[in-house]
Length: 351
Image 1 (cartoon, one colour):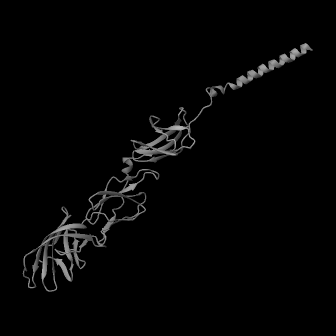
Image 2 (image 1 turned 90 degrees about the vertical axis):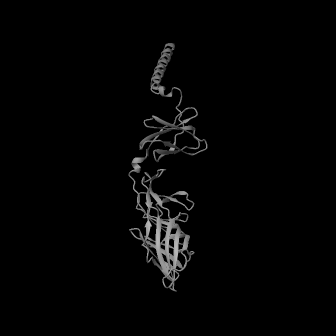
Image 3 (image 1 turned 120 degrees about the horizontal axis):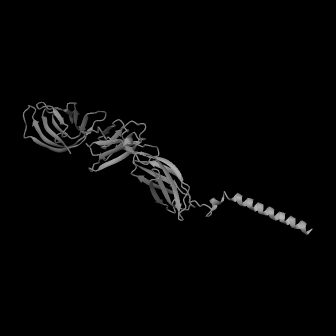
């Protein structure tokens, strides 16, 4: 019986040794991966986006509230360029600008690091920076039309809605001689101003976005000047008024003209401008001085003083406009109901 038990226990012991050896061999492939303990990762970024700009991009992302990350690392250009962003512990959304980028498309790697140096699983996103090449491909809209109204001295711009652009950038001078810039979205076809300096010009550039989500707009490189009532505005009028009696003889000494005249474009016309100030008279609704500029820069003078009609001067050359200086040289006259007449030699100097 003792011999039988010895054989039994010896056999069991041998079997255990074999099994232990087999188990040891099964654990060998796993061992290298658990040396030093389980791998810990920092919280990775979420909702990663790259928004296009001019020679720059805006990288945006989010992080969960229970995050461990303390820094975000962004690399590009085959990981040769790096930017580190400190993580605000209370913020949820983050962004950073990568500037001085040549115009190109890029592959960005973004990962985070926690306070122990553990890294997150990286995310990869593509994005583009735009520059002179893109801007050079853009075109302005057609030149808008513009006019001012006598009642409120408003300036109104009209243009057709264009496909592909996002609006127009207007540059102008206000009544205080201050330069102003205003962006007008392409959802608007008309805009009005009540602070535009009369007689000044207005430049415009069409605005574009290279991508729908771009965070910067591009203007067409070339500025266009709107044909903005170039003769509307305020003028200093200087000259003389000569009076004639009903017999056609000069009556008294010449009367000096020295006042301010405001001209605005007549609605529905391209080259007709009106003022309620005639000669040296005070502004009055019953008076109107009308200037019609011809293509050769000669000027037809018409209008009325009460019931008396204004016409070109009977003796002096036709009135004219000098584009280089913006000065009008006017020669005109009118005859009253009693036969007396007034002949004007007047110069309008833009203010």
